[in-house]
Image (cartoon, rainbow, N blue to C red; front, top):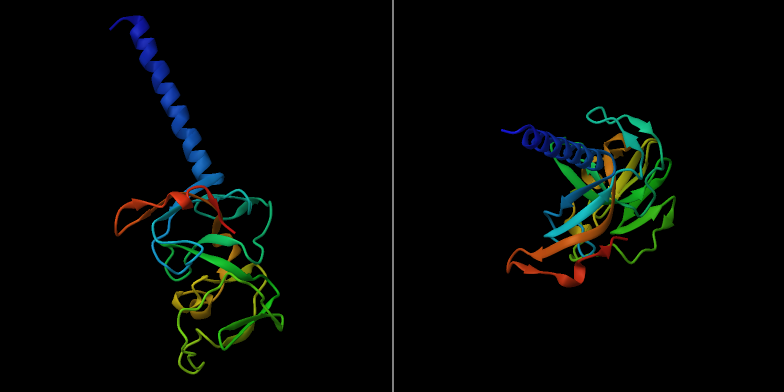
Length: 204
């Protein structure tokens, strides 16, 4: 092997190593891709949607420790967030922020009230006309509860088919991975058809 060829291999190796470091840095601190596995966020997000999540927006966190090193902002009501599922830290969930620290959340006959005011939104949908009594489960009647500081209360947009804070409690801010902001790929798993109309769609 000539010296020039050896130098070329070394240079390629350095370039690949740097590229890997940059990719890992971006994935850890700036943006990451996630796939939607369930219908709990319909119609906003569908099974087979692939999302990009802004990890920098809520601050730079130390990997594994999840301690915020550089604070930037905190989640706001209405943000669609990806977070570590409190009941199983090996899983990531995606839901919408309904209440932040200090808010009082109550659900009466499927209607959501924040600080005793009806949450007026056209995002949450109901597919089940049945109203389940509070004594049976908290899906349609919940609270009132006050969200602790440093935590958020989340729900899926598909309100009747979402396993969320109504059932397992609050999400700690340190467990939030980022805010979903765009769908970059989407296909119908049944027919393997690309949903062209969803590509590039901004998530609200």
